[in-house]
Length: 236
Image (cartoon, rainbow, N blue to C red; front, side):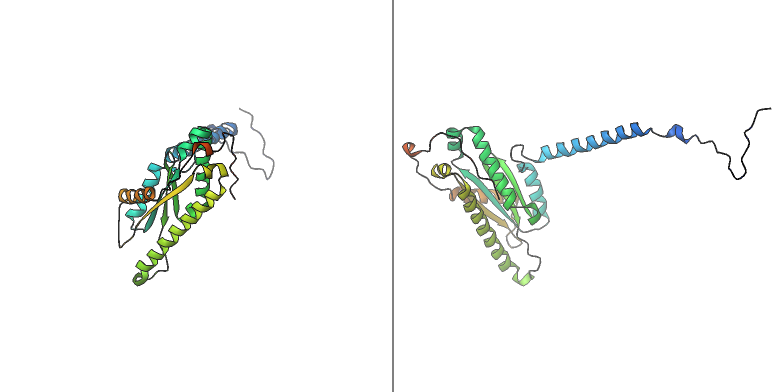
């Protein structure tokens, strides 16, 4: 007859439990969690790379257009702005492409600072030295009877704000770049309930206005700035 262990009064006999056979060891569990975390990070990195410009970190053209189209399709009133860095090729030719890239990043950082997503503004690098922004014209407290006038006022405010931002940015540039004629040209177009337009039409109009507003700067080679490293002031 097999021996049995005696029970101490008040003590319960332990119940055999085979659940440990289905349990994952703590160390293995941590490895699985770490792997899942890495997969999530990789997925986020891939998504960011697919939707953002790798040099400036702004949205790329396709991702920007997708977001703007969604907002237009919902009936939102939007202003679309086109920006171009004037005489950017001269910067590359005179100071090199590395410095040209630095200037692109500098302008992109300024756009990110002044045209914020949390303020319903979307910014993107379209290609080369061309950038774009979309800004909501919606006014939540606007009565329908006054909406058209309010939208016009809001659009004018957006235009003035963009112009002020460009002037501020240009003032931050080194004197050598300003003498070279480096500046920012702007074009603006809008879609409202009173004049609904698709994105292709908005971009064409904004680009047309931007090229019309491009500044003509006469450059004399003998007055060109010397070839030396330039510093861009930190943005505040």
